[in-house]
Image 1 (cartoon, rainbow, N blue to C red):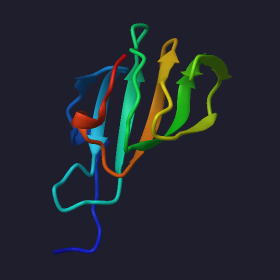
Image 2: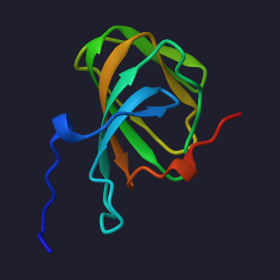
Image 3: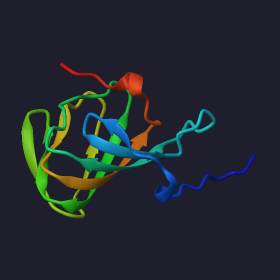
Length: 113
Protein backbone atom coordinates (compact mmCIF):
# COMPACT_ATOMS: atom_id res chain seq x y z
CA UNK A 1 0.00 0.00 0.00
CA UNK A 2 1.29 3.49 -0.90
CA UNK A 3 2.50 5.86 1.77
CA UNK A 4 0.38 8.70 0.32
CA UNK A 5 -3.10 9.44 -1.02
CA UNK A 6 -4.20 11.62 -3.95
CA UNK A 7 -7.58 13.30 -4.41
CA UNK A 8 -8.99 14.89 -7.54
CA UNK A 9 -11.93 17.06 -6.54
CA UNK A 10 -13.26 17.12 -10.09
CA UNK A 11 -13.90 13.38 -9.59
CA UNK A 12 -15.49 13.58 -6.11
CA UNK A 13 -19.30 13.76 -5.87
CA UNK A 14 -20.95 16.43 -3.73
CA UNK A 15 -22.99 15.28 -0.74
CA UNK A 16 -25.55 17.22 1.29
CA UNK A 17 -24.25 18.32 4.69
CA UNK A 18 -25.48 20.64 7.49
CA UNK A 19 -23.50 23.50 5.92
CA UNK A 20 -24.61 23.02 2.32
CA UNK A 21 -22.80 20.63 -0.05
CA UNK A 22 -19.41 19.01 0.47
CA UNK A 23 -16.86 17.08 -1.54
CA UNK A 24 -14.87 14.90 0.88
CA UNK A 25 -11.38 13.66 0.07
CA UNK A 26 -9.29 11.00 1.81
CA UNK A 27 -12.30 9.26 3.34
CA UNK A 28 -10.99 5.75 3.80
CA UNK A 29 -11.01 3.18 6.62
CA UNK A 30 -7.19 3.01 6.44
CA UNK A 31 -6.76 6.79 6.93
CA UNK A 32 -6.80 7.73 10.64
CA UNK A 33 -5.22 11.16 10.13
CA UNK A 34 -7.44 13.79 8.44
CA UNK A 35 -9.93 14.47 5.66
CA UNK A 36 -10.08 17.46 3.34
CA UNK A 37 -13.40 18.89 2.16
CA UNK A 38 -14.42 21.59 -0.31
CA UNK A 39 -17.74 22.95 0.92
CA UNK A 40 -20.31 25.15 -0.80
CA UNK A 41 -21.93 26.95 2.13
CA UNK A 42 -25.62 27.71 1.67
CA UNK A 43 -27.81 30.25 3.45
CA UNK A 44 -29.44 27.55 5.59
CA UNK A 45 -26.26 26.20 7.25
CA UNK A 46 -27.18 24.59 10.59
CA UNK A 47 -25.59 25.31 13.95
CA UNK A 48 -23.75 22.17 15.14
CA UNK A 49 -20.70 20.93 17.02
CA UNK A 50 -18.39 17.95 17.22
CA UNK A 51 -17.24 16.13 20.35
CA UNK A 52 -14.01 14.71 18.84
CA UNK A 53 -13.37 16.57 15.60
CA UNK A 54 -11.24 19.69 15.12
CA UNK A 55 -11.96 21.62 11.92
CA UNK A 56 -9.93 24.23 10.08
CA UNK A 57 -11.95 26.40 7.71
CA UNK A 58 -10.22 28.35 4.95
CA UNK A 59 -12.58 30.73 3.14
CA UNK A 60 -11.91 30.69 -0.60
CA UNK A 61 -14.80 32.77 -1.95
CA UNK A 62 -17.72 34.80 -0.69
CA UNK A 63 -18.31 36.91 2.34
CA UNK A 64 -20.32 36.66 5.48
CA UNK A 65 -19.13 35.17 8.71
CA UNK A 66 -18.83 32.18 10.94
CA UNK A 67 -20.84 31.90 14.14
CA UNK A 68 -18.58 30.53 16.89
CA UNK A 69 -20.20 29.83 20.29
CA UNK A 70 -22.77 32.57 19.66
CA UNK A 71 -20.33 35.19 18.32
CA UNK A 72 -20.46 36.15 14.63
CA UNK A 73 -16.93 36.57 13.25
CA UNK A 74 -16.80 38.36 9.87
CA UNK A 75 -14.88 36.55 7.14
CA UNK A 76 -13.51 37.29 3.69
CA UNK A 77 -11.41 35.21 1.28
CA UNK A 78 -8.29 33.75 2.90
CA UNK A 79 -9.66 33.96 6.43
CA UNK A 80 -8.77 30.78 8.33
CA UNK A 81 -10.54 29.59 11.49
CA UNK A 82 -9.58 26.66 13.74
CA UNK A 83 -12.70 25.21 15.40
CA UNK A 84 -12.05 23.03 18.45
CA UNK A 85 -14.27 20.17 19.66
CA UNK A 86 -17.33 21.45 21.53
CA UNK A 87 -17.48 24.81 19.72
CA UNK A 88 -20.96 25.36 18.34
CA UNK A 89 -20.53 26.76 14.85
CA UNK A 90 -22.02 27.48 11.47
CA UNK A 91 -21.12 29.55 8.44
CA UNK A 92 -23.41 32.50 7.72
CA UNK A 93 -23.79 33.65 4.12
CA UNK A 94 -22.85 32.09 0.83
CA UNK A 95 -19.24 31.06 0.53
CA UNK A 96 -16.89 28.34 -0.62
CA UNK A 97 -14.43 26.95 1.90
CA UNK A 98 -11.80 24.29 2.36
CA UNK A 99 -12.37 22.31 5.55
CA UNK A 100 -9.63 20.19 7.13
CA UNK A 101 -11.04 17.64 9.60
CA UNK A 102 -8.75 16.13 12.25
CA UNK A 103 -9.27 13.24 12.89
CA UNK A 104 -11.11 12.25 9.69
CA UNK A 105 -14.72 13.36 9.39
CA UNK A 106 -17.22 11.04 11.07
CA UNK A 107 -20.95 11.71 10.49
CA UNK A 108 -21.65 10.16 13.91
CA UNK A 109 -19.78 13.13 15.46
CA UNK A 110 -22.23 15.83 14.29
CA UNK A 111 -24.36 17.13 17.13
CA UNK A 112 -27.30 19.54 17.05
CA UNK A 113 -28.94 21.29 20.01
